[in-house]
Image (cartoon, rainbow, N blue to C red; front, side, top):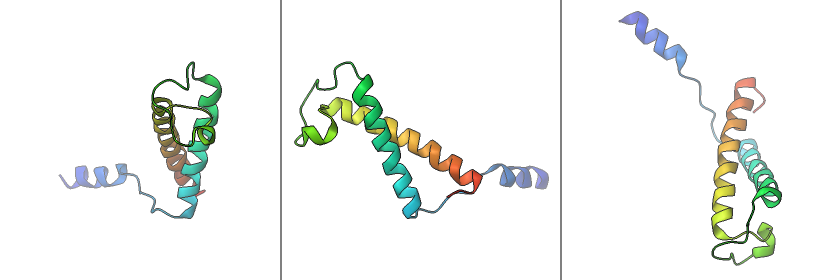
Length: 88
């Protein structure tokens, strides 16, 4: 049993505490996702309009929610990858 506990303790990755670099990395990943979606989404203006429509590339609410969801997934992967490399 002792061996199993020590094995599980080594399998759990260390978590990174939030700091300014982590926040900026997530912001950059979301901006990249919005820029990517601006040119790849077939009908970005479908659905309810946003108040600052020009600020988000003319996207509607559904496209923006999908894009920022993708941006957060991308950001989580980039942050975990950079943290494991010791860059963050």
